[in-house]
Image (cartoon, rainbow, N blue to C red; front, side):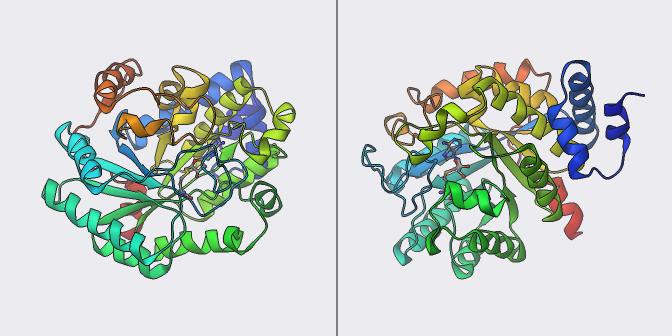
Length: 360
Ligand code: SAH
């Protein structure tokens, strides 16, 4: 038995075990991916769920040092898609049998914003006769706001912790009240207690980040008993403060491979959760998301934001598909999923099995 084989057959992996897996190469790496693919097939099957992603506003009050739509970036033209256009995009997803959508935005915290999203949820339920599942990804909000959105039909929420190393967290965010590490964790706990299928994730290949940090991220996700995960490579953006460290980063190809390894290990330690094939993978390798699906991811988020806004939701440089429209996605995802030997589950909500297993 090889070292990897021993690791893969242990029931609980330690941080040290995970570091070993994240560093493995060659035939050992092949074993890792074969194992995670097998776990995927057994626990969630070779099925891919779709979430039409609508990036409805890039207005943001935060100043995260990695993000292209951070408040201080004056080179972004700010937009706020009208309700009519959002409903139109949701309708596109519904008619193309996506089963679910994600409404994502920069972070705005106001009574008007809460009300607007509530109203959008009502309109989407009305348009789809309650048949379209809605995931929200609108940053940190109060317990009451999360509760209100849940009561109006939002059933899943994505809020990445970005990194679970507090020291690193404050290297990539301003160290102030608006960017509190504790409050982000509290927000995740609130989402869980309200009953959302709760999603989180981290960026991989950040400046100053170590293999141990990444191993601890995975163990933290497990300990938090998270239902859905989206993790992607960190990709530098030239109009952000972290860009100054660009020469100290792992090469893009290595950040890409490390992300795949993280997905594989996560699938092994959390067998029945939903894992997204992050868009950022595709910006490094054309077939990046397909590789993620092969080794463990089971969720794809086709971008259905109206084409004219996409260029302004540039979280990182070389973000893919910013010159396309929703219709272009449709033919594209069909063949992309087909080559992974997975099947798209049309008209399905694609809920996290893990979530319902634990509340049963
Ligand atoms: N404002 C929302 C979500 C919008 S950004 C929130 O706070 O949850 C969505 C995600 O994009 C972030 O959580 C972050 O992980 C990712 N992202 C931002 N900048 C990035 C970069 N430079 N490289 C890779 N991913 C990035």
